[in-house]
Amino acid sequence: MSLMLLFFFMIFLSGLYIFSSFRKHLLLMLLGLECMVLSIFYYVFLYLSFLNYEDYFLIIFLILSVCEGALGLSVLVSLVRSCGNDYVFSSSLFVC
Image 1 (tube, helix red, strand yellow):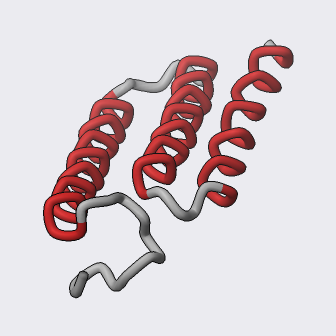
Image 2: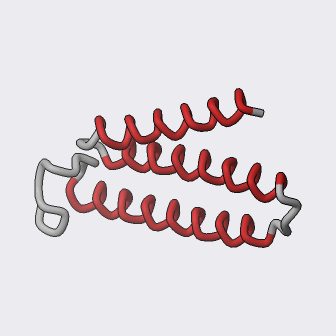
């Protein structure tokens, strides 16, 4: 059990590293955020299954994470259509 928790913690740290080191590209930042959300989902799943609680919170968490991913992809598509690239700091997000 502790090896699995260590593995999910390493997934979270790798997602945090990706999010903080690849700040130029919006797509890589979104992938890092999704990696962190996935590891948090596994932590919550293990916690709820260990304490024998209901899993309704997991459904709500997955719905919110899917909405977050869809919102991030829509921002990415609008940025690529307006500016031509996904560089975050190359220009302002509103004026290209």
